[in-house]
Image (cartoon, rainbow, N blue to C red):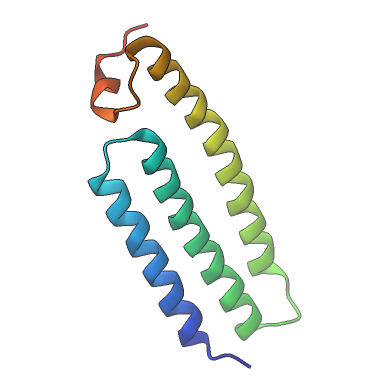
Length: 102
C-alpha cells in the first residue's frame, strides 16, 4: 500500500501550483484552470484520508463527488461570465472585469 504522505505531498504540490496560478495570472481561463487544480488537490486529500482512516466508509468519496459537482458548476458559471466579458471587451483579462456594467 502506498503511504499517505505521498498523496499529501502530491496534493500540496497541486494546491501550491493552483494557488500560484490564481495569484499571478491575468487571464480568466488560466485562473479557472488553476482553481480546478486546487479543487483536484482537495479531492485527492479527501480520498486519501477516506481510504486510510476507514476503508469501509465512503465519506471521503462522497465529499470528493461533491467537490467534483461544485467544480463542474463553477466552470459552467465562470465560463459564462468569461464569454460575456470577452463579448463586451474583446479580452479575457480579469483587470477588465471591474469595468463591466449592467
